[in-house]
Amino acid sequence: MFKNALLVLAAVSASSAVLAQTKWDLPSAYPVTNFHTENLNQFIADVDKATGGKLKITSHANASLFKAPEIKRAVQSGQVQAGEIILGNYENENPIYGLDGVPFLATGYPAALRLYKAQRPALEKLLAGSNLRLLYSVPWQPQGVYVNKALASGADLAGLKWRAYSPATARLAELAKAQPVQIQAAELSQALATGVVDSYMSSSSTGYDSKTYEHVKYFYNTKAWLPKNAVLVNKRAFDALDKPTQEAVLKAAAAAEERGWKLSEEKNKWYLEQLAAKGMTVSEPPAALAADFKKMGDLMLVDWLRKAGDDGKAIVDAFRN
Figure 1 (cartoon, rainbow, N blue to C red):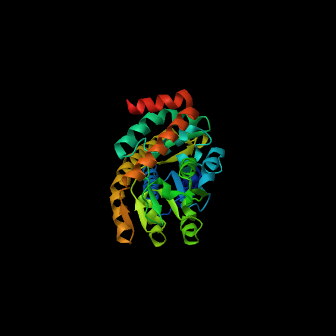
Figure 2: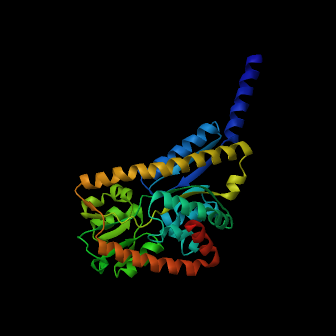
Figure 3: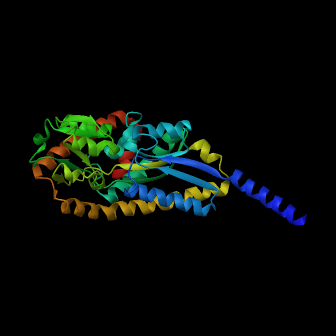
């Protein structure tokens, strides 16, 4: 009888443990082999370990659960508890989201980190108003131009079918007199293969992941900007966690952010080498092309400051000072 009582107690304890476990879904838009996803999966593993399995997060990569533009709304509304977005996609909601998409404002990792530190307080305030909390943010590699022909100046971009993934990339296409076509990362390979687009500006990792080298042969390393991904959590879902679990999530997020910035920079060199090894001509932009892009960037900064008002000016001033 004593043995039976022990078995019942064990069953009740196991049942309680199952009931105490919290499960989250976390959609992202990038392949499992992408460095952002690798970093995200390490974050998830760290949370699992730190909470002893109390918080289980399931990732859904490559836009398998929601398409990239849908993820923020899904987290905000509670359809999922967390998600990864690229901030620049939401510039039309608020200019603050699009600051890191202003060309040639911050062109390297140290500058991009300073810009992020200047931007983060305003970003956190903005997200909190939408029932969201920022866990961490990691940049893509510096943006360069993938194109199906050699470029000498900005005039050579006219008429190209330019993949746009954000308001900033669409605006850049308009200034260059190219044709912007909205294509998300998960659709890029097919769009290139079918001729829907023949050029775009993005990171070295995107070119490698999408096998762009199979379709176009030129990459100009313009280092235009370093757009950031952000991992967000539904604020109500986060607040529902007990204090130790919250602390474990925030600690894992801080580690993911630090690790992700280092990983982005380290892998940039490797990605560029791989693009060249696959047959792409990887080069710095000609002087005339760089100068033309800089002029476009100056125009876009003026536009951004006008839209962002005093809050935007304060961020840019803090970054520059």
